[in-house]
Length: 112
Length: 115
Picture 1: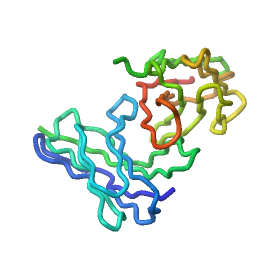
Picture 2: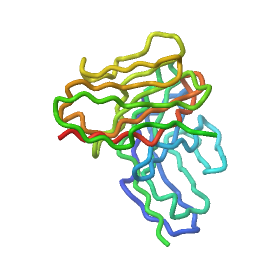
Picture 3: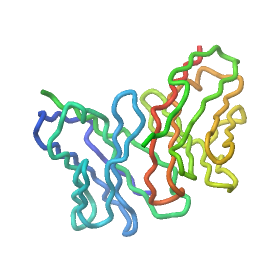
Picture 4: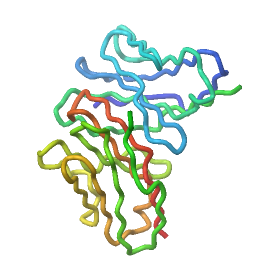
């Protein structure tokens, strides 16, 4: 699977949009971009995923560049409860690709 | 509805003792996964159950680790003769059918400390 690169940490002001970048320059044409997050002392939580088109759900928006080499997760109105480690991963549609693996992720701190 | 639950939430044990960790998946989910997360480390896959198929045990780190899933629902992860390096957060997840691109829903984890 393609490797992803994320900034180690970032701060965000409460109520503002948080834009989390992710590079995946070696992504293959059939690989998906997934985002999870992990709030302190909790299990990972699925946020959103996409292939080519931009996606939006009740939690966030995912913007994927046209060449698919990078993407941005947008939390439209960050709250203190959004403070967490955010993981960007690439998943391949192989039958055995159920083994999730996270890197270091981005530690996002939302400040009042 | 109820999410994935795990018990106990915390477990402290002495080196050499056996421990059992329990996972209750979301009702109706046929796929169940165990992972562990060590301090400062990423997510490590341990084992995967899907319906009545043979489980994928490829991630179990040694033969001291075993898991079972009774009645296609509750799962128990057993660690025999625990070692200090087994200290970690053990996470359970479930999904509806298993495989890609299903979303895996995680429980809160069991924090195991081996003294």
